[in-house]
Image 1 (cartoon, rainbow, N blue to C red):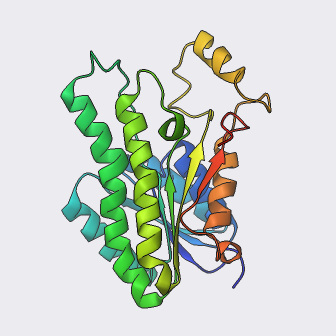
Image 2 (cartoon, rainbow, N blue to C red):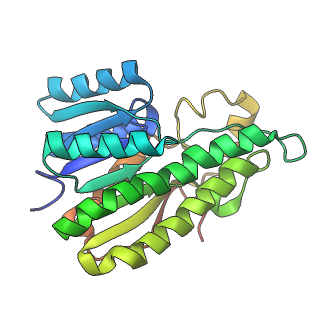
Length: 248
């Protein structure tokens, strides 16, 4: 089975932005997609969009900070779609502020969604993948988890944590034919970045050697590859999708 044709994928944070692009791309390439988000009205629209294009999808409302809710939804996905072979942990938020002014609730919420949520979803998916002896886990990190960003101590810490979690997961599950990798986007045009000031956007663009802002589709293409059969010998890696903004 090449690519992702015939596979069953679950994408968190799939209602908009990068998550939506990932869900649409996997479905277009033949995967059945569980579209998961806390934004129930928007996720239904994404599932309908996939179906209208001839793909297969089902929407599931889920809060990645609620462990019981996660377990329930993952059970529903397996029961309804038959199995779970690809997990894309994409859900994430920002609550930006300088360290000296950052409120503890904003630190805790970003860590809970961006890092603990990835852990809990991975923990729910791994037993299913172990039984199948096949699986792909793709976690969405960030360039700011690799190089840091002023005003984003919580976000940068959470995304750096995702990289460590990815590598640990890869070592634990490799013997069962399961891979775990991370994609680290750079400056991508999303609802999360469109609220930035024009001055900040311009300064960020100057740091990109390719000279353009990335798109959600750029990230989705990388995820599709790592989720495919063609990436079977790649695990524990971080794929930067940043236009050359960071070259480690």
